[in-house]
Amino acid sequence: MFRSEVLYLTGHIKYTLLEKELSMSRISICLVTVLACVMLFSLPGLTVAASSPETNKQSTQSATTSLKERVRHSINFSIREHEVVVETIRTSFDTGERKVNEYHFTENAVLPQIYTGSTITSGHSDTIVSDTPLGLKGYITYYATDNNQYYYVLYEYDYSSNSLRKVHEGENRIYLEPQLGIFYTLYVKEEHKPIYYSMTTGNKVYTGGQILLEKDFTDTDYAISPLPQTRNVGVYCTSKYQCNYIEYGGAKGKTAKVKQLWMKHDIKTGLSTKAFQASTDVNLNISQTNTRDRKSDWTVVATKNGKKITLLKDRIGYVHTSVSPERKTLILVTENGLDSKMESSTVHLYDLKTLKLIRTYDSPYRARTEGVQWITEDEYIIEQYFSAPGSFPPSLYIISENKHLKLQYDTYREWKGYWDSFQFSGIFFPLQPVAIKSGEGVLNYKGQPSFYLEGQHYVPLEEFAKAFHIQYVLGKDQITFSRGQRSSSVARSSSKLLTLYNQTFIPLGQWNKDLGLKVSETKAYWSNKELLISDDERNTSTVMTPENLAFHASAR
Image 1 (cartoon, rainbow, N blue to C red):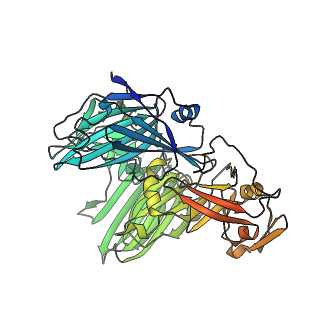
Image 2 (cartoon, rainbow, N blue to C red):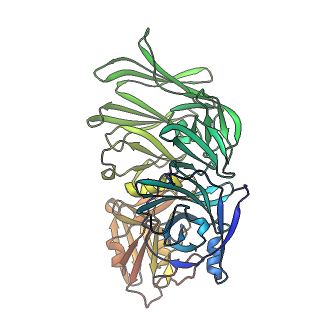
Image 3 (cartoon, rainbow, N blue to C red):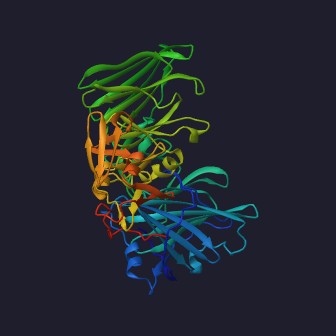
């Protein structure tokens, strides 16, 4: 990833296969914080490469990455005594299992220059993994305090070479945009002065201005032309809005026309308006007038091929707009009331090709909309304001299926920065895949793995039934199961059966217990969960077939 001349040092690395819980928090892909010494400035990159003669084949395989695998990567980091420890976590969406590999970098050059092993009074690190154009990279931002001074250090772990590089060490907090190959600081000696650096060279590429990302455009805070052709979009604008698309590493790409959007008020007419290009052939005009009692007359008009179509005309409190990344869908969220006393919040979905209303539904909660996080063109989450957000699970909405899936807030917050880098065909629920194990067998997934939703573990019915030799019939009123001499049934009305993208899921419950399959142990980790199934039919032919899958992690 780095093309600058750097000093390569050989470090001794011990490899250990671990199964332990992550204790480190992670942050969004859009923002990563780091630390450095007050006395230090930007330093040349230093790399410690992996060198381990005693490493076996398993560890060598772990150091290389095939992006054809359905594997999500995350990373952990710590400084112990006089070494840097990096943990790589691989979570398989084929089995729901995970592997944790630990590497020890002992060369002094990779330690923070201010680090003595005893002066650090407190420390913390934030980490993120990104599938960059130059390969899989893990970014580690370390910060600590000593005598009321702050230390900021940015590292890069290269998966292909199994090496750790100290990218930057300085006195100012650093922010990272890994998908763009850029990091930047916002303040110099308490003066607001953004400085942007290339991750590939370490050199300064821009001073001042700002970088705009996908969400700035999908939330219609800014308009851009030409429209982005990729989800990993980055645009650099000077203070005078002279803008260019950013190529990976910070180089200027093609020119972009960018305009900040807000409701502009005309004193003469009393009309406030906002206009922007919603898609390649649709322009949107939003107007607001006659404001009183916290409500206004709002009108949303779309123009396509010279023809104007009124999408919305109502007296309401506010209208939020969002367009999908590929400009196929328009969202209008209409609200009445204040943050703490929201009377109503309604979502209107429009097809930007036909300008027809797809459907209207009430927002997950009566709360102010802050933005829309698009997962795919078919999935999104409306982010709403709460003083205690952990009490209100975010709702993943699937447009084509017209279904809501409630997510755990903490898990969503940690994972949402990874969706752009790690997406797989057939995966609609990208949080904490659940491994199903019984004896020496493990359930192998072809599509969406088992998942945890609203207090229950959902398993893919067809794959679960095949693995445990279960026969089932999806009747009109009930679902019947048989396994050897055992049988059970569940009423369709109470089964909580869930079908998405031609996959049917059912929560575990009494039906599987009746068939001799009981959950004997649950192991929960940050990246996945494991369910151990005890089988009363373990001495019969209905037992799960033992398999030694490629990603079959060893048990504790």
